[in-house]
Image 1 (cartoon, helix red, strand yellow):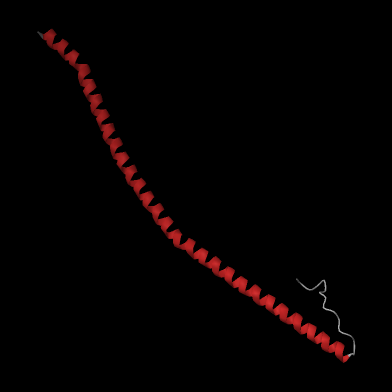
Image 2 (cartoon, rainbow, N blue to C red; image 1 turned 90 degrees about the vertical axis):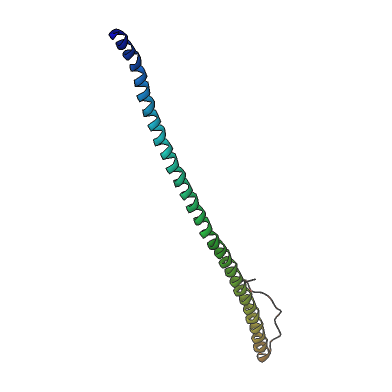
Length: 119
């Protein structure tokens, strides 16, 4: 009978070992599940952070576009004024030239653009 109990005990020893191994694996699985939950939370935080960053860049983007549009309008206005002033200066120079030629009794010079005059 003692031998039977010893044989049963030795027969059950691998089962105990497997049971302990299984318990260790279950603990590992629980640890991995905890780690997965942490990673999910971290992923969610990163997504929220990215969404906030994108949202904060959107107004900056529209502000940049508005600034670009405003800058273009200002430059167009400056260009228009410069062209108008150039036209006015050229007209004034032509009038002064006509007056000088009249005072010197020279015939009127045909309007020609000098090479230094911008087009």
